[in-house]
Image (cartoon, rainbow, N blue to C red; front, side, top):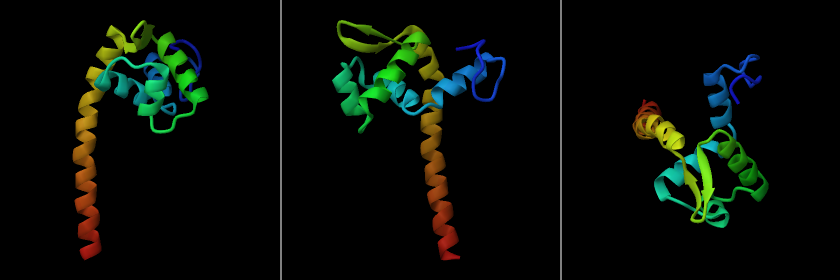
Length: 114
């Protein structure tokens, strides 16, 4: 949480607290899946997360709820307005990462041919 020491910041600067949270195993994956798939139960989210352990999923859900990025409703876990706003910043990085992967693939192919 901002204001508490996190990786990279003893004072817990908000940007460092955000990067610390998003850098944890499955944090961005959980947010991404809920934003793109929609509300999911715990079991449904676990299935979408390709083998995440129940313990890790529970931890991430708790942390993401505390950060007000997701909440739990009668439909399951859903993204909050704050989580959707964050996703709006992350989604372009997802598209950029596809271009980056293609670039690296071409570069590696060129290096092998040289």
